[in-house]
Amino acid sequence: MVQVLLASAARMPYGQRFYWPIYRAAVEHDLPVAIHVGAEGTGVANPPTGVGYPATYLEFHTDHSQTMMAHCVSLVTEGTFEEFPTLKFAFIEGASAGRPT
Image 1 (cartoon, helix red, strand yellow):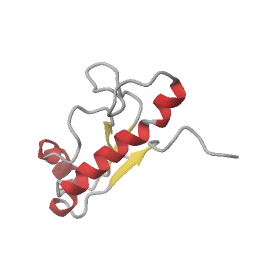
Image 2 (image 1 turned 30 degrees about the vertical axis):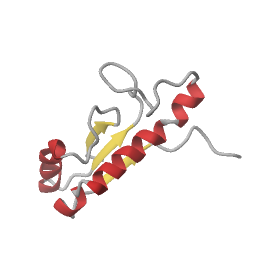
Image 3 (image 1 turned 180 degrees about the horizontal axis):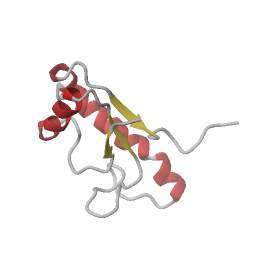
Image 4 (image 1 turned 90 degrees about the vertical axis):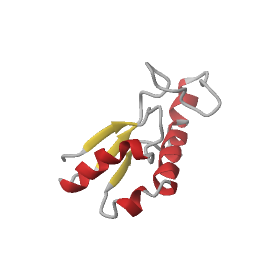
């Protein structure tokens, strides 16, 4: 699969117009845009949750859904899909740490 891949650890939510040139290029080339979790709280990225850094791996991993939800809300409320109605956007591995068996 060919796609435009972005890290979910971003300093600005992905709905902001700063990113719209990326989406415009993706639409022009018929490529989906995807974000993947994993770098939250490292390097120059913001803390992985709205309240700071978790203490355990399970908490860190489960909290990935917060980052994905924040980007999703931003994309919708900033009008990204109205500006780019054919944009395909995927959220990869942003659910929770596990599920009951």
